[in-house]
Image (cartoon, rainbow, N blue to C red; front, side, top):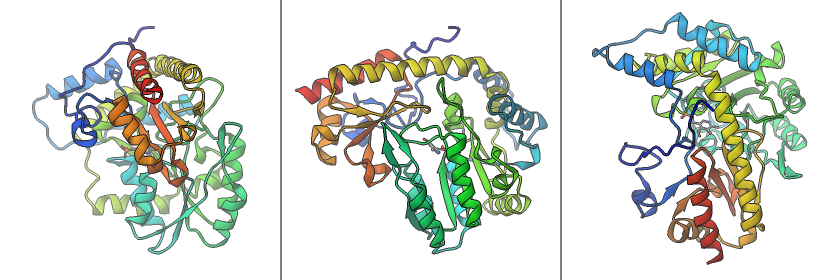
Length: 389
Ligand SMILES: Cc1ncc(COP(=O)(O)O)c(C=O)c1O
């Protein structure tokens, strides 16, 4: 391996959202944080080098979007995902959640119903509710240790007039990498009922051996024409603090509407640093990402085997993608406050507590696997001791 993912990088005192809030959030500065989806690995060296060179310019003026930036994006998706994006389909945005919120505003009306498939990344609920729309729930079904979509229930929601669907592809939490067949079936329903799809594909690059990310908009021209895909290099290369993201659609009307809203809120100016990092990551990041995936898959196997041996009553879902381990802890018989007490007070670890992903997540924990294996082991060890203690 050319990259040392075992190296412990001390992130305390770096203004880290993950590492410098334990006292404030959980009442204990020494808690091991394995919650927010941010990795404890250095980004690819080419990204750091590009940012250092950029910083050394010394004048941090207004910045333009270069063709080389768009070429890096289109090149990456063609190379890694066999999806050919035209540069003019790309609109920049400060974040995927920003794009989700803007899409809700742009492509639905106040009071309309928007489908989400819980348990799901919790800002999906917020962007609907906070923009005055109604949530229509299509809970995922667990079958043979993995989530599936409930197409019958989905169809009933679409029939009743839901205007939009927020898709999480791959899915957080649960780590499902939806197959072509599953996505096609979803796409056909959305086409039939005239529903806009906003596909959050931020986890697209973290997919493990034996699975393949299918960009929803790559399924057909018809499906692409009803879809806004929200993307970012932030999960893939650990750049979430740079606020670099973009939305893609070939549908010109949708793009104009979205772009106009981005401009109306004055979110369109390029950040001085972010595009440089994005361009470097998508141009030079292949090897780093390939090695990262091997390491992450190793961490997933390690956690599964640890839990299997030490806490066999828990039921972790083997992730097909994402660095998140969705773990059914209901056999511990603890309420949500009791699970928090167990994590924060007794084990002194912070996994994500499952009910924030929807009521289906009560009794579950989401473990962030993207840290050096020694740290992951320590966190699991602390948790196992606390459960048995
Ligand atoms: C599914 C999903 N979408 C979006 C985000 C956050 O995106 P951003 O920071 O670009 O708003 C996350 C972060 O965990 C995520 O898991």
